[in-house]
Amino acid sequence: IPLASNQVEYSILHREPEVDGVFDACREFGVALIAYSPLAMGALTGKYDMSHRPPDFLRNRVGPFRGRRLGRVAPVVALLHELGEAHGKTPAQVALRWLIERGAFPIPGAKDGKQAHENAGALTFTLSPSEVRRLADATVAWMR
Image 1: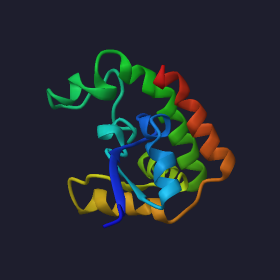
Image 2 (image 1 turned 135 degrees about the horizontal axis):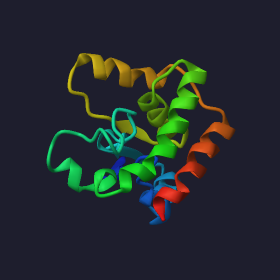
Image 3 (image 1 turned 120 degrees about the vertical axis):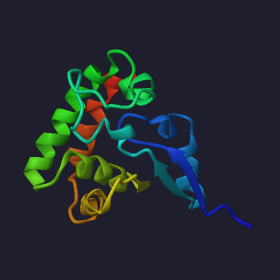
Image 4 (image 1 turned 45 degrees about the vertical axis):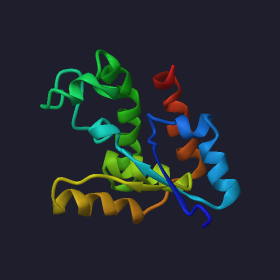
């Protein structure tokens, strides 16, 4: 049975599939790359910053929320806001659209129907190649 899809953690902040060969292998063999945690556990929604962290204990100790990492996410979120305003979209929708433009299939979580509907808004617009590049470039500092 040929491999049809590969589900990996992938977001603007978690880009290991681009570095470890998974992304290229999926393209080469026609395998769909399904991106889980595409909003980096909420860090890319614009809801959180250093003075407003998520309420749950675990999330404050992992990934983009650990220590001062959330402060390093701020420039990326600012760009998501900027591009979102230009398109009439939310930061989360722009973050999801970036993945779609890269050829991935994001599967964001949603706490309720409102969030699910908002996430679906990522399908209603496109980002230009220069916008996709700007977002990719904005995350270079985060990945160091």
